[in-house]
Length: 392
Image 1 (cartoon, rainbow, N blue to C red):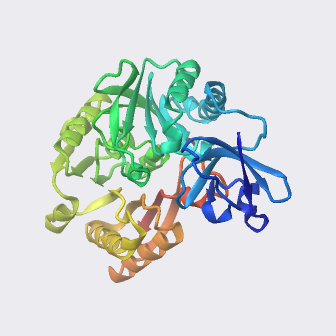
Image 2 (image 1 turned 90 degrees about the vertical axis):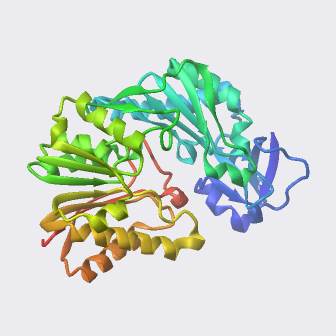
Image 3 (image 1 turned 45 degrees about the horizontal axis):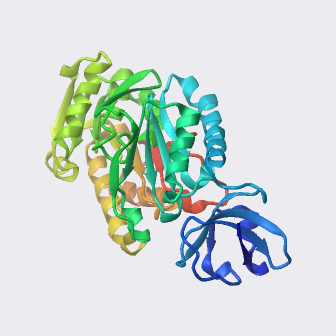
């Protein structure tokens, strides 16, 4: 394998196993290295630091995937990584009556650039970088050997691929994958559109937040904004909600939300599904709710548009508070990586002050068990969910 030298004064992140090695940390970069080529990193004193793959001649030169000097990339290598990730999910996720979860969470599962989501007996994969895509066949072979899925579907139709000049790709890779897959999460059932749905079909990273919301839904009128296929709506009904309104801009998503309510045996007459832009709905709605869920898409997709995104979060949370009864519960979420948890909390404080509402935090959540984060990899943080109570 190709050996690269890291400047001694820049070796700290590699020693702490931050998964990105930036170009300025390298003493030199030989010409002609292709993305995905395995590399070994050493400091200027000749001490081994880590292994990984060459990413590009851009800012992130190497993505790390190991700390063993003699470990070689190949199908066996990827199978070991998958087996290690699977062990954690089987120990802490599957035992919760759940058969859908993130199996591989990129850098934090030591497979940078790779996402694998498990939906019952099927897998959905995303290849984010040119380097990891080089190993696609070995990775798919490793997934087949370790998981034995009935089918593997690719959803590499994601904007991040543009940074590596990669085109969006989606389609069947192995076996057969139905258009709609039925999964189980905390004993509840959901229909997932893995081929056309958002992300890989379902917001798996909100599983623990959905479960936590159940206790706040009992005997309440609930509004689920940006409801998608009704994940929070189903949990609200399971928690004993009197009535649930789901608002989303996608008719297709709302059709699945309605089906998910019925699939779990709940009374669909207690649920309303409104296809409308959430901001437009909140501006025109005259009803008050005892519990409101705000789980919008990322309003800050680019750090250069942070202030514009912050204004969006302030606006939507302010409108939600106007429809929250005194003493009500607001679950406010953000999946913007460019907004920290502390900054999100401060933003909500500003919104509460402007609305003359005294808000208290009951619970805070970030990533779930199946979305682990390496301690030094703060760039991997994105999800924030805060349960707030008015008039504490």
